Length: 418
Ligand code: DSN
Image (cartoon, rainbow, N blue to C red; front, side):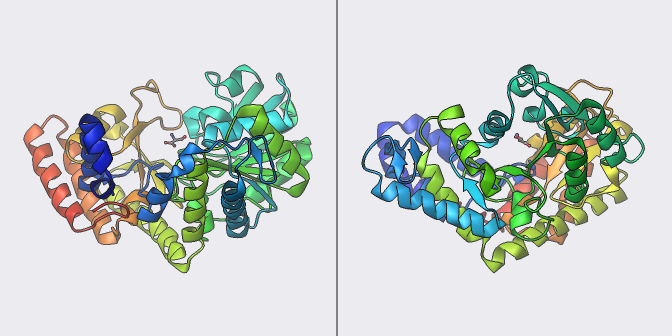
């Protein structure tokens, strides 16, 4: 994309233009396995880079604080309608800048400081904003967390229920950033009802799978659902909140003026494009392939002696515990990056190592699936990962694999690039 549109930038700021081109080349040449990343389409990129960035529009369609909203209102209403149709949601707010502000707005809509919440523990795959003690959600609220079962490393609903009945949280949060299985939203609903809690689901990681019908939807069960729009959903960097109509006013007020100022209209427009793309039949094929690829990669890694948390995956991500490989997650991630395979180190459940250098790596298939990789390429990725992890200090091997990776990638131009 940038090679087509950076004429002015090259003239005004060649240094920055060069850096953007370099990042574009990096995204083209590497196998990107960070589970929260993707490649947006050229149409989404184009909508993101428009004059809509020039406009302020605090408020909502028909009730703004500044004039000149005749087109902005239509853009925001289009994005809302498309998201409602895509997810079958009664009400959608498309203004959150990203997932964390979306989650914060939900806290503001339903809770007061000091209220009790129950969310998934960060080291077990939850998110910072699900009540981690370093987050505002853990500092301003009384946050309790549920972890994974020590034996299965899966959600243990009896344990979650017991914690809910013990602590009586005002809000229970389901959803995760590093859990390779599918939450049982019906069970969460029943637990929330029994405990008298609001149920919030953060579907940021699997929203694209929900849109593409490759994952159950939390919408029928949750009072409120939040998401980013840039992970499996393959839209711009942004956030959305979906809720029942009865909560619409509280949510809208919490987003603006509660947490944010003016919405980022260029992002809203790009979201509208992404929602349209995600409603097309091809997106269902894409979502199914993300999961098929994750399963194929999990099988190929297991064959090579990798220990996968829960033994495999049902979604777009894999969590591998490298303890039996005698390498830390960070050392593995650094070596893999040198070999052209980009992922992140990650804590595994009950990790004995520190969060900055944990025992595991997280692997996601959304981005590679966007560029057309199939099961055969997953096998190749597993071979490369295995070779690098066996020889994390072998710079010559890493350079050789990086060359092979670039050659493979050259055959699969990603959306938006090339
Ligand atoms: N940073 C995101 C992730 O990688 O999962 C969560 O916000």
